[in-house]
Image (tube, rainbow, N blue to C red):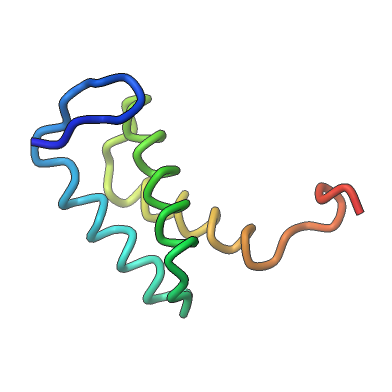
Length: 79
């Protein structure tokens, strides 16, 4: 059982799936940064807490998140 740091809810058997999704996304994007791993896991945990539990959807959203971290759209970076 995993306990959420933010709302103290309990996630049964959810943590292993998130870790697998995070590792798959990082492997496919070629990123090995611990910061990226942490940020991606927090992002996927946030999505999961809203009710998104479909692994395919989480993988797709996580890949888009990593892509935006690596190649931010200059229209939205404030530069």
